[in-house]
Image (cartoon, rainbow, N blue to C red; front, side):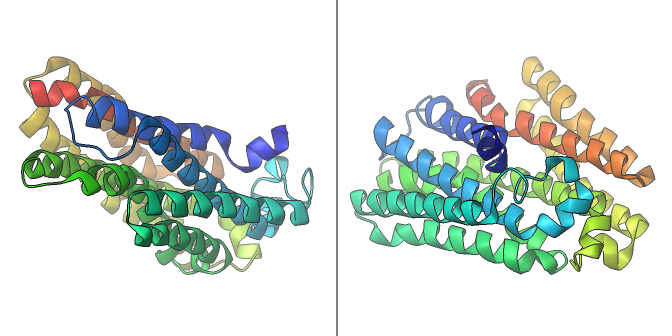
Length: 305
């Protein structure tokens, strides 16, 4: 059981669930947004999302076996604790559950076409693991877009179907805020994907995977990471100045838990060379992502200040 939990990256799934819960109960409901899904319906949306996400982790590990034997042999699960056949069966089961729930929700809302979101996400995760991740940058961008879209998913199923002429302004404002969070998630995850490519360069090279560090080398890739990192830093500074400046608590929170770690990352990425350096920076970005996305629960203080 523990091996299966590790395979589906249960801490990541908990983080996804927490983010979705905060969006629903500390954001939408806090500001009286017109919503479509009941608590049960939203729970189904979360379950479908978690199943699709978990399936993505499983199929990625299936295709990464050869690289992981070199990059992280101590964490190798498939072929060690779980057979490839069982992993493939789990991938299929998770997708059937996720798409099945998505089909039910889409028809419940009277928007049967919405099921395409789950089908497309499932297919893209498979293509990413089997082929697209071998294309430099493209694979990093696509998987980061999916991460960002998770933040917008509640808008699609809960916010948009309830829009009318009376609430359009409020609904649009809440969506624009979530869009900012989605862009933040996209950028931080994109940084982390490239950093992980730096970390896994030896195994990827032996597995024949063409990543940015393999093509350009560590030094040039670090410079690209630094350039991308300027974007979230600039955006956060802009947010502090324009939206948070009058709220001391939120300014301190953002400075300590998001901006300061990002600036530290920007400094350290210049001198990162060894696997342990990139492992450290990858973990740091994960922490920044956590504090950034969970701050959605604090947004009520921004709008009422």
